Image 1 (tube, one colour):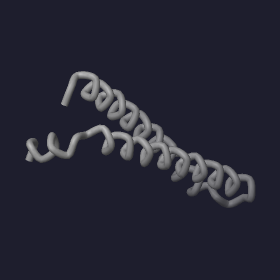
Image 2 (cartoon, rainbow, N blue to C red):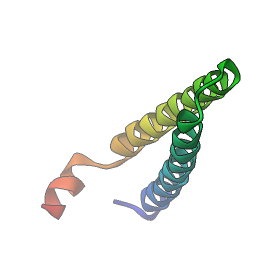
Image 3 (cartoon, rainbow, N blue to C red):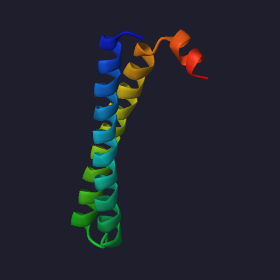
Image 4 (spheres, helix red, strand yellow):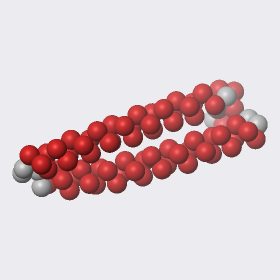
Length: 80
């Protein structure tokens, strides 16, 4: 694996970590709203948070896909 690919992988991993941290924050907010979910307004807030979580999960999945396409299978086998 060359230095350019290594740097790309590091950037992707950092992006993935950021996305996962954002998802955890949203999940906590969702849990808090769910506990208060007695009114229609709160239900709408929960739905909005779920939408944000879904978008962030899509970004995480895209990031993982990019990472998988950068890693050379031969390099992966050498790590095993």
